[in-house]
Image (cartoon, rainbow, N blue to C red):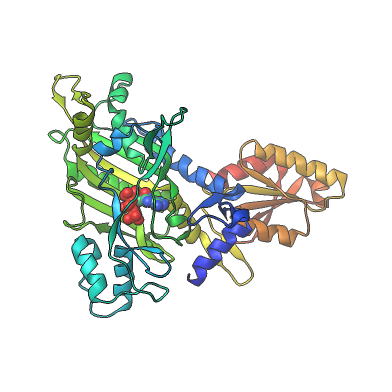
Length: 460
Ligand code: ATP
């Protein structure tokens, strides 16, 4: 772990963004709980995504499907038998490693492999690479023969003993959109091109561990299927428009430094056989450039597969010409927890005297903190409570009357609160409070009666 990565993980725990799951029992690998600050930051990210891609657009609708879908869904989608990774086991510790990740690490550290693109290697070539280059595990041991490792998580449902059905926890949210395609057509007035979005939990039996919330067994995805008629809309134009939307969301809505983002086009060998074009929007995470958000032109492969496996008529009928087609899709799919990690990494700033999270006000878990200068003066507490009530109706506001003001500022800086407001003896006489700006640390006197409009101007 590099220093910044370690510091972010530590701040997350210290200030209540992220805790290791079941810590009192020794924890579970790659599982994290979100604390009081983390849950609010995650919610803010999801709300911004929903607003931008569902609410603000006339051509988009949202759904919320189940985590457990009919198991045939996953046969149709190709996940059963085809959603796996090539892994090797350390023959002493039995720890598993993803072969592509081992090769990626190896070529980063050794000269002479600059030309090699791991994504282009077949599974046989990857297996050969491990043997020929004598790759060792991080514990210095040799590996077992490579084998396939299923990423889909299985469970069973049913109340009768012996009468349980095997099912899967969804490996992506997208399939719940495809399986509801007909319901959406029948119950709404959508016309092509239109999109369906969903935010929800997905599950994968991941092999590579130790990347904090970047890669976990249980995570949240925000996925869109944008349906269109390839005879009437140009897929390249639609794909480019979605690429622009994604970048715009990351840079302008989430306020992430554009220099730490890049596009990576999937190579022909790497791309799924049904996809005509795939791009990843990568972010420079503390452990290197990694996929944040993928966008793929998936043709009408998924709908056709569901037609084949379910027998349902998943066609779209043109309301003007009555022509029937099976629409094609562009799929932008992002992990909410990866966005969460990205915005923290982007905001984390170490200054001479403090650590400060320079989160955009839209993202900050708390927008304002209200401090009575002292906690033992009834008039001051009363006035501060009035200010808190005035603001907390509109903005998520933190109340803190503990300890000295310096410590209270330090805490709010570390959790990214844009403004701190202090009520003191002067306030009782003049009606003015002290407003301190997180980024500049400058303080200003503002009349209580002007606070609402001041905050609106600064925070909206
Ligand atoms: P990776 O190559 O990093 O495993 P992927 O290409 O398998 O990712 P997709 O199947 O395209 O990922 O899923 C869409 C998005 O879901 C990804 O861009 C990523 O942001 C998120 N995601 C996928 N797997 C995980 C995970 N295990 N933990 C957190 N987020 C994930």
